[in-house]
Length: 412
Image (cartoon, rainbow, N blue to C red; front, side):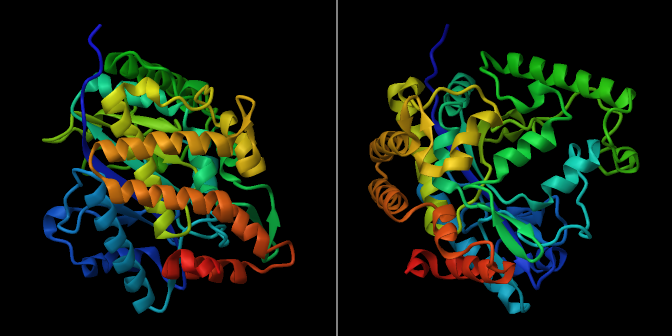
């Protein structure tokens, strides 16, 4: 069998932000203020919560997907600043982390192929705020090898990004651990087939599509038996690219795996991409950049040494794997060691990968941020130190707004 010898050729990062005092549709309409050229396409777009969330598709300042992590970080940082300033110019504020603490009961839903399959699932995902890192490859086997390796990384990524220790309760917060997202995923996805929510070990792209076909057939059977609370009006509504139903097979955005394989991301530089999805998003741009550096550093190390060098924790590709770190944070035990030790070890692998590609500053930034996280705590730790059951949603939100605006200096 041919070994994986391909390289990372394209880089992206998707960030989901909460809004307060501003409407997502209005902000998206003003997205031209970000100053990107027409070829950049849709850089700011709706999430499932059509009113209170926006998704920023990170790319370079000239509107193209980045070819390396340095260009991605620079462009993403500039876009986040422009987006924040655009929101603030309307009298609103923007924040990351902590999932969404607003009341979502009466918000409008942005119906997509998968959310239309279950209205309960769609309503639950109205509070999602996460970061996805997109790693493009010029070789299918390399992409699949990296995809498989990420099964060993998910708890470590959540240990870096945990930021949702609270749930909303009567205008105040209630502590539920360090990240409420994995338990939400477990609950919301339980109505779907297990293969739709469990990341498999893949052999080939053909193997991937065979799994997707099996899931598609199972979902069609559930629809036929009225076992999903589907929004049939949205499923059947005509759209420029066709209605969502009937369908023969899911597309590659519909598998709710912790990491997705994305053959549909083919471009003139990449054959396909791997989309690493952290259930939580950090609250500061420095930590978002550290997430990029960590993921791409691992990809670069795998490019050099083979992807078995990404020796993380035993992983089964389920959201169950994330529950210990969701409840216990950096002290959660995996493979008989606290996850903080796995973070240190994989962080060194990622730093070496960045250095291999010549990204010395990025390696140093990752090292500094890992030290900060391990000493000062995750965003969840910082929130738990400052707020409790008597704290108001407004106070928590104001802290997160300051974190995004001022960065790590707002800790002090």
